[in-house]
Image (cartoon, rainbow, N blue to C red; front, side, top):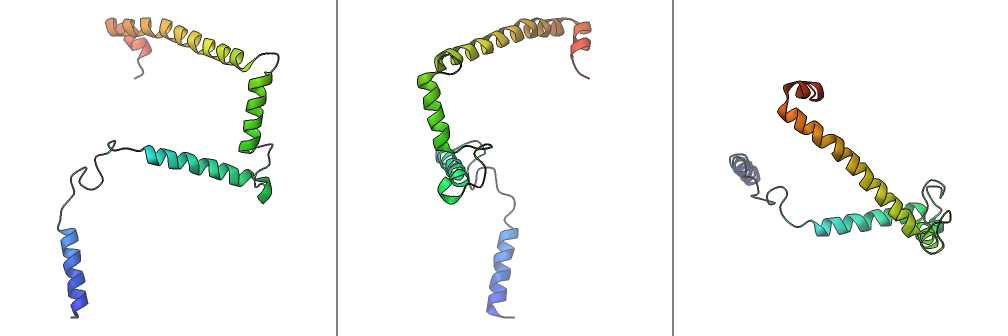
Length: 132
């Protein structure tokens, strides 16, 4: 037997005889640590990919009808923010959307909370609304 094969066998024996690692031994426990760098790199990567597939200099891979370039989106955003859209400013459109969200939340709470209380206190209501 060569020296190399006995050395490799020793390495394999050490790897497989170590037993399972405890959570967090190598890379930290799941959900711990800082992921800011990963989030920033992902965002930059997605913007770069977006620019790459829509760049007119490279011959866009995706037609602007289906995916406009980042520059076109930015220009349109500035135009809507300064000139408005359908005789309304961007702020007015935003306020209308926020109002819809609050009304929907109020309606959901007004129906969900009483049903939840009824389910917690009455067996018949629990049977009617709790899925099997």
